Length: 314
Image 1: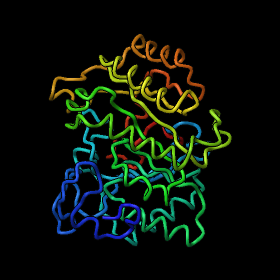
Image 2 (image 1 turned 180 degrees about the horizontal axis):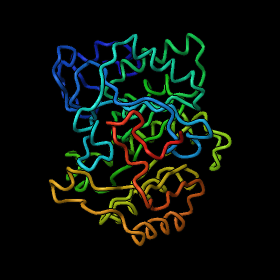
Image 3 (image 1 turned 90 degrees about the vertical axis):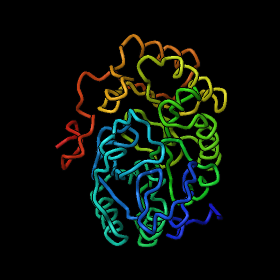
Image 4 (image 1 turned 120 degrees about the horizontal axis):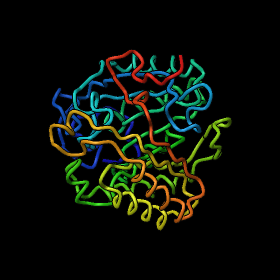
């Protein structure tokens, strides 16, 4: 399979779009590790103001939340779509129409959230949108868990990459998403993203001028696993230097799967987050968003709502 040229739908027939490479014939209606068939399903699409200011700006980021996930972290904050299958089927034409309508709302970008398992749909629609003159940035908002040889295909359509770097600890990755290879896989993928797109530009923390290209890496701090965060920061600094744009997030909240597993059953303490922030400063990161520890769940999504985020502007 020539990963650099995947824009057709045959890729679903022996699906190897993600590092799981499960080989399932999703086009025949079977579900892959992502828990999805080849029917593109979307839980929500609309302007979102809860992203970093460089993406949300003043008019919002045009987020598209896909159902399913190949990474499958049990603590996922979007658990309703990553584990419980919330979402609606969009055929090719209705998916394209959804994106075109979203772009027409004057959002700053179209933000594809957890997009890799529906990449053939996305590549097809993005190519058509560009042909028809839609010029706003396309943003690949992802787990970081990608085949390195798929990144060139993504970069052929995407202007911005916003990958997570979730785990520096292989054992924690195994516990949370059943693949201890995550640190190596994600670092290779991010390395390729940076090679192809560079760092996020322009860098304007105020959001007055929104980003148009490049890479920003996110990291969610997990309660009780501060060393994982410190190690992740060291890996990123050693690989990319202090100018790498990063976003360090404190928004973790336990989900029902956390309760079921009796693991990660509390929120992050301010003291834990302060320890991680101190490491960001010690390592000299110059372009860092530091999320304050939230005092509400206004941006914890509920995909049963028309707008999943209560904190979004009306």
